[in-house]
Amino acid sequence: MNREDTITATILGELIPELEYAAPVLLERSDRGDPLVGTTSPTDPGFETGAVDSVLLELFKSLLPYVKLVLSWGVLRIIQAWLSSQRQSRQQSDLLSMLNLLLSENAKLRQAVEKIAELLGRSDGEPVSTEDVMKSIAAAAFRAGGTDSDDERG
Image 1 (tube, rainbow, N blue to C red):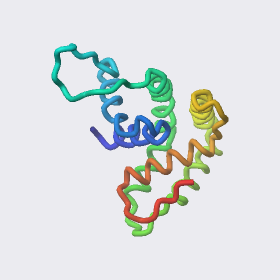
Image 2 (image 1 turned 135 degrees about the horizontal axis):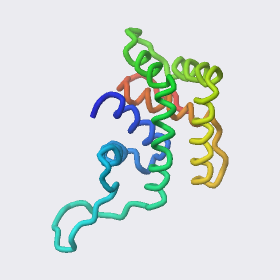
Image 3 (image 1 turned 90 degrees about the horizontal axis):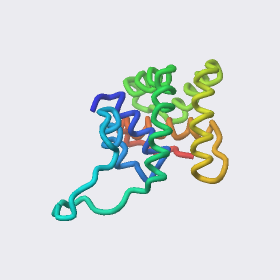
Image 4 (image 1 turned 90 degrees about the vertical axis):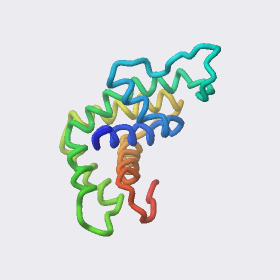
């Protein structure tokens, strides 16, 4: 999995916490055009057990193109620059500030983030703000960077 896919999967895992660990596999399957969830034979002695919530899978499928769009509109560039910065004290709040600045300058990016917030809000049954989405993206990038400093999730 390349760095962009890792960031994409981490963001999706942050937006849909129930799929946090499954997001990389689901993303790979989606990119290959495979079904997100395979069926197994009743005689298969495999260890994959449990059902995957179809509502969560639909949310994953509906968010994926918007997350990729958001990343393509400059967010990925900012995250990659932030991750590769040599500063020892990279802060999640610094990244969030840079992302919010880009969001304020780019109408198409704002529309995509608003769509993500709308889809999440419909799924959760309560409003989700664009600020919440941007915080999730920053938190995901912070996790993807593997930093050991304090987690500033809000």
